[in-house]
Image 1 (cartoon, rainbow, N blue to C red):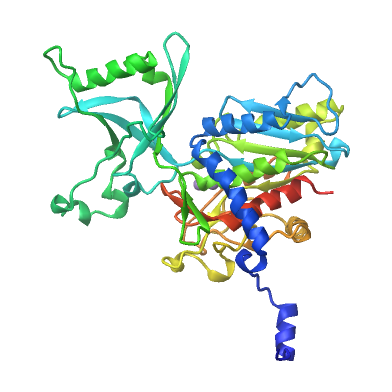
Image 2: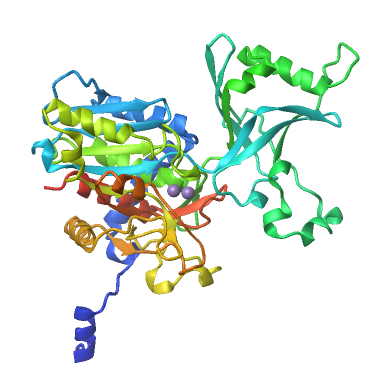
Length: 467
Ligand code: MN
Ligand code: MN
């Protein structure tokens, strides 16, 4: 082998030149990543909504010895507890051996995803076809949603207070639903619209039936027939939609992507691809030094609002309750705590390279992406992690052989976005974003690399088990 030149050796010492996971990881580690992602895909496919994600995780956690948190019961190192916040958000904790006032380690992901929610009064008939009217949830490109098979997930609370869960379209024998689009032959005017207006929000109506109720004459017989079917299956009447949360999501399961099967395509990677690793990391945590906490939040996609979103006080109250079990105050725990805000970031897409700045953008297979700040314009709406925290996290990850990269959310002034990071930072917690790079973020079929998903698991494990 030729000897290295002086400049070559100097470059190796001085330059920042991160190598991708596909180069740095051994065959065994890549195989471990593939195996890990089998579990992830199974979780993803049965957790398409926040409520389903909570149910899946409670099941996994209880199997690993987690119990509902009782704020009146004493806590000791190794105890595993959880708090189910209204079936839509979840807190998990493993009590550490160090004093609680040394702070806790937090991995915080969200489990809601962009989708089409049914309106409160959704059912109508038009020209002998029955529809559900929707109001989209989160940042979607509306043109991506017509002509996809859709499944309906959620809950209906009946007039008498009883409730029924709904999940139609996931079983291969189930029917699916669909938003229709205009044929190109007659789309001359539509094609002149901008992509924002190409498919309008009020046109995202889901086709749900076409056969009339046959026994009688009258109007709205297709709608009547649908209601009759729903009444028989769920015991509901039309007004029960007024107290329901029904979400239309892509009906297909996740799939391996590529001849090499190196990637996963599916609905809802944002942010289950961080939620699942944050969960597996805490499930494998036995007696940590610092108390380990995993949070799965709702409502991130609409600004973390509401009592299940990260702007709510439930994390603060939970930490206060844990602190109280040791005779301490929550604020003295929070101020010493460290949080990885676990959310996805943009991966460089060679088809759209102009929106990112290559030296500061994550790549597929580059490992987990550490994001110092998100926000938009001049760092508006972001917590911007400190140099000290960045230093601590990078040494933590390097010490655990985590393949990681740095990434910004796009070029300066080209757009932007936010995560739950700033709401946790607002609680006086040292917080920085760390997550998985994604192609086609917020699309009905998003893409991630298996090696990056596994690195997220290793990164959250390193945080929750720090000494
Ligand atoms: Mn997200
Ligand atoms: Mn998102």
